[in-house]
Amino acid sequence: MARHSGRMSAQPVIRTADSGDGELLGELDRRAWSPLHAVTPRPQPPYDPFFDSDHRPREFLVAELEGELVGYVRLVPPTRLACNAHVRQIQGLVVDGRARGRGVGRALLRAAMHEARRQGASRITLRVLGHNEPARALYESEGFAVEGVLPGEFLLEGGYADDVLMGRSLARAAPPVS
Image 1: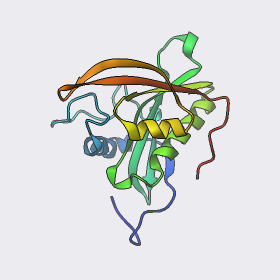
Image 2: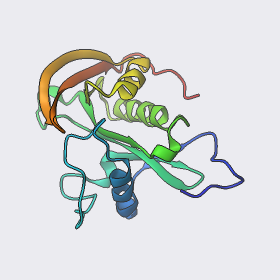
Image 3: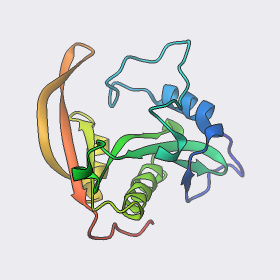
Image 4: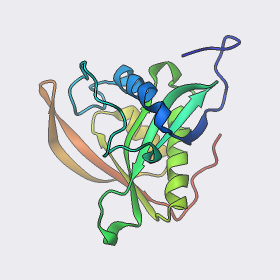
């Protein structure tokens, strides 16, 4: 990640991903892999393309600090069913370790809620591993509540991890981006 004047800019810039971001997002995903949040094994070469028929650029918002891509969030309808078309689901929020503590995750989360509202959604949900306390604290601080827990849903590195389902209404505005 490039640095200018010895420090990154204070505010992340959030934009929709484009097809040219795939390689950088793949590298970010591999760098940020951690048993804290991953339910898949550590990626190994040869790497699959980041974007494919199931993961399209328009589903991703990316964060940049001083022109460097430092995070993303994926926002999609949870199913193809018309009866829950009013819901959007976050299926991945990643921040480069070197950019943590700079408000990138919060900016991405707020941008995802704004985009979900723009798409006509009235509710947003996500899933997070029970032991991922930093992510859970962020989500709770932005109005998400635990709506269900699947105990021991994943066997990760020799231990069982809970799958925590969280959600919130989009009827009330999110706090302003700071």
